[in-house]
Image (cartoon, rainbow, N blue to C red; front, top):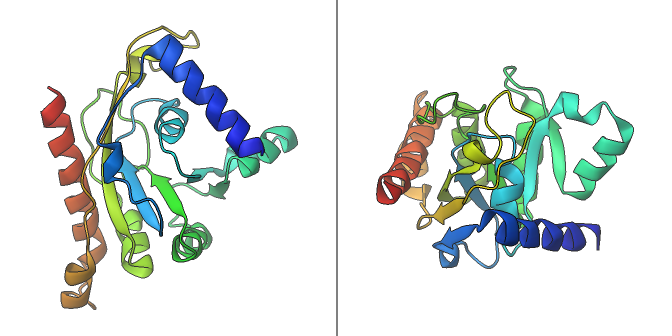
Length: 205
């Protein structure tokens, strides 16, 4: 109930105040574990991308955000779980794989942190590991405009238009089977995901 109510509230806010436009929503599978992999330019990316997805999406969130008990409760109700950034958090990776294998969708940001200038950064190998261990397909996503809604180092919202575009699912089964034992497999998967995100960016230019 909590998730459904807040999902609806965020969606209405996004539509009314930020005129959010969604492209390619039909590319998101209606069932089964799937990773939605998006670029990252603003703190508002998770709610903007999440609220336009009709399924109940799982998230990874920085572990320090869970220090406040009330906020931690809200995050968990929002299907988020903590990850220690910059440490290769094996526990968070296992939890992500577990949820994907249960058939749940997950929103991930392969770059690991927000881009300062809007340019796409290199994807982290950890995302490739989650794909390889879960076998989940990946839907690349690109969000445009959220960096103008809440500019970096700003606390004031601006009512700018936001666009969220979803690409066709990428199936890594063949790559995984052919490259088991290859030390570059995880980074190669992440690289291909970022290429998919870059293609969506080009389409919006």
